[in-house]
Length: 272
Image (cartoon, rainbow, N blue to C red; front, top):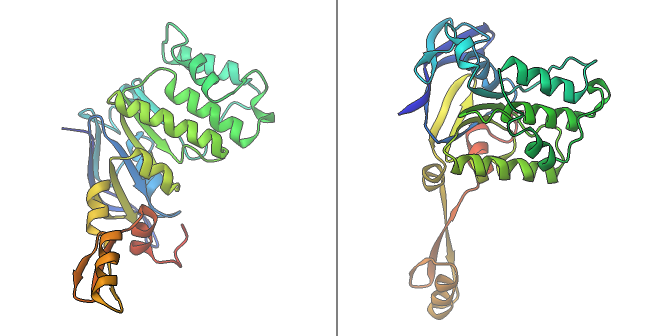
């Protein structure tokens, strides 16, 4: 059963910008990676899911509720990291997290301390003086501290250093084991490969591919045939590389990385 449902979603901004007849579903307990270059429609899709934009046609639902008409209800049990996080800059990080906790009606700090420790963040300073990485950590804590069952994450590791990116990947892996439903847009191929069980690739506002990560790799296998000097060398080569031998010729298969699959849809010249 799909927890997140997008059916025929269209928002045409003109000039080929927007999303067009977009349809996909995200099952309960699935980490869904949403890949595409800047301007492909990732953030537009997420804004519809959050109820910030009304569809021109089509529909978005989360847990059976319409994302536009019932956005207030949906946002009470959702975790969200926007692509560009806006804060009350004069607040301290601590004040901002306390404000959100009260807004959500949290009766305790939830996972706040655990997350602050995980990301080595002291939130006492004013947000306007924080680095981009520190602001991103505040956004992560804000999204996860009430332990939501569903998370929508738009470029969640933007601005984080490699160590903190790794900590975030570990967090997603833990949430996956807890059967959380996560929709994540990302430019980080390694991040998606390590966390996402299902992947959608969007191009020009249209879904170019959508499948399990395993099936995508199986469908994009490169095969190479190598000619050797004699059959003995060919047999040894076939054994070492798990190839199929015909006389002196050996055919070997190589599975493409997610980045290679992605570039196969876009080509090297596209802005990714």
